[in-house]
Length: 38
Image 1 (cartoon, rainbow, N blue to C red):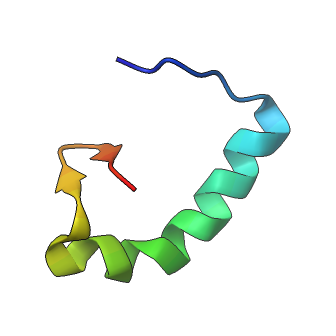
Image 2: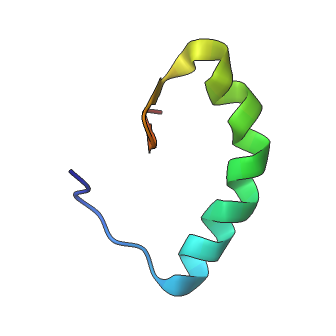
Image 3: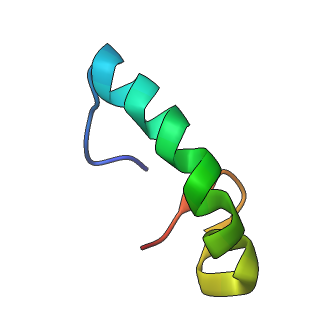
């Protein structure tokens, strides 16, 4: 249900920031499967 697309560069960047955001989202701010709700 992704209404947006990311380029390869953006995808790699997402992987980098995902590690930093991981702890934040694990606090229960919005994790549902592999989808992130900001």
